[in-house]
Length: 131
Image (cartoon, rainbow, N blue to C red; front, side, top):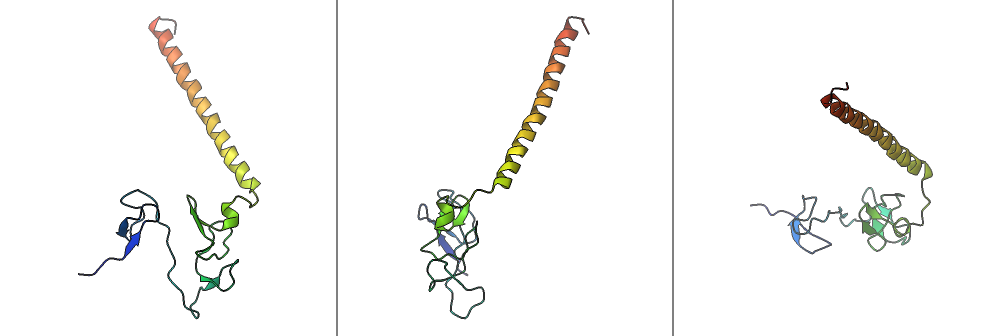
């Protein structure tokens, strides 16, 4: 029999198969951790804050290479300390796009609500022989 690689949950400490995406005990999402690197490997980067620290992990927002000392695991994935603290500038175009999509959804719902109420009123009026 071959042994499966095990991964330990960072939230509850339970052992899980390395191929799973969620912890079987607490349901936390696993974040892939890079393996140790040697000096001559391809894809080797150095942390932007610790120039002698080799890494393959990058920030999910600004894509800077970050070492295990600098990374912060959050609900949106791995972030550097600058991005995780909220000091990065807000992307106004993305925010405006999301807001416009929300308003668009409200307009569509209003039309459906109006149609449903009109149908109900017509049904009730039909019961009394008006339409």
